Length: 193
Image (cartoon, rainbow, N blue to C red; front, side):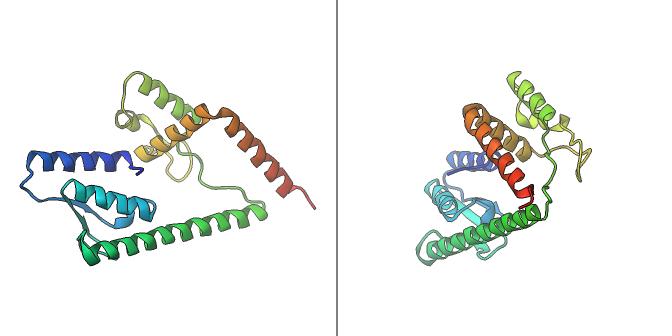
């Protein structure tokens, strides 16, 4: 189960509260179920994790508002709507990819400018090496271009940049090959037939 740092912290806090007060009902509240995971397996695993630790899941909106009942029809409905949320996410992803492909055929290669520049990533890596947490580093990172110019980058953007950097460090030859392949495809798409 892939869990984001803030979600992991909230889960840890809920488990600690339950451990210190096992007789109390501890409710883990989220806006919508789809915020808990990217696919049905993640959503179901997280719901099972909460139940196993004696925690109650509550959703404020979406197809199943209210307290999640892990027995009988509640579990069945949760699984159904988790699958629907996964399908919705896949549809959005496919539509986005189709839009990018259509734009590329028209010679438009875009997307948002990177929120975390190479200089910003270097700053993050240097400060992490000095023992700083991402949360401590984040206020010092100012987005240099684009719609959010002058604002702080989000913690999620920093973690994404760190994950991408880590991938390049683990498999540099694969990254270089992917860049070369991408450049070749762009050249081919831009050349007149």
